[in-house]
Length: 503
Image (cartoon, rainbow, N blue to C red; front, side):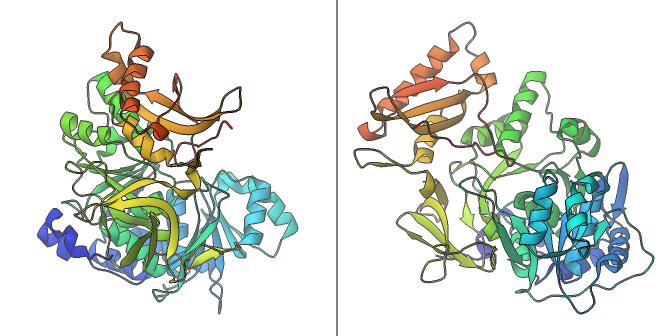
């Protein structure tokens, strides 16, 4: 199965849709943006606005600090969300080098280990993180450490790599195993960047707020890169505790967020009786975890904001599909983006195309690709008659009961999440005292909906409603224990629920 960008044409302003063009490299994209939006604000950070032209001049000078004559090495970028990150990242990739994105929470030993594992020849480090480079400096003095706020008067011109040339190494989420480094080409990064333009009406010259980490593929590609590609302004929120204050000042028109954050903003808006995301916000691009249909309906009903769910992987340069028909098909992650081929084998989605990674770095790849070169996502899916994609589970999360039944927790959780009372749910295998295995369900209630119950025993009401759904399921899929939690689940850095097994 394969689609083209034309399936998204009806959802975008016609003039803007025709301006969405594919490019081979980040260097080409950046040149295009600087030429078309020189005096527009591109990045706003720490009280200072930076125009496209000013950033280009700054990046040109920073390239002089990190260039390696005759080589195109891997250069580490070890910075928190900041203008320094943006400048360093653009300097590395427009020099034709490969940026290795290191999360700022890494400790000294892990920083040293990553430099060794990924063959990093230089490390750009934010001043606030210099202490974490002590082991590297002591053991590998041949690896220069360049401070991200360093200045230089010399200018070095950009290099224009081919689409197949390496661009960036990013850590996968590691939610079902250890983190790996996925090597993405310039073409893959640009395909992911352009994919972020499809499926909504107003694309160019928007105002974005950055609250996601730039070390995550969703933050780097959909939040930063698509913003720069479209001549938009990106306001960097350095501390998520200041998010709502920053929103009031910057008044974003588009927000890129994970479901847990969108849920929190909705709950606070209802609690305080005003839209905490501001009156200018038109769209929320939501992903990195399953998006409850409740959020889609509530944002549209209460605030007139359209919430767009989607699906992607680090290995696919983030974006695989997006849902422009969110009102009609809220359970779907949408239509396939262009320039990729997919097939479904035994329920598993497999992909190949321009957006896919080159390889994992320093990892075995046995079983990652099938015999036809398709990447095995590990995600269980189905397509409806209109070509819309639905995620039904993960192969690694399948529960095999003693009866031989294969149970997909995600598929069951969707049924229970249909209740407005339920914010999050997790189905897992448990074991009773006599050693018998059974399915258990834990849920986190949705506070505003629970408040509507008044003086009623909320846990009892919620349990009763869940039991009604449970009774409609096939016998082998029914849960035997229901727990209503009074606290959230433990989560990964990307706000996905950490799955666990009790047995």
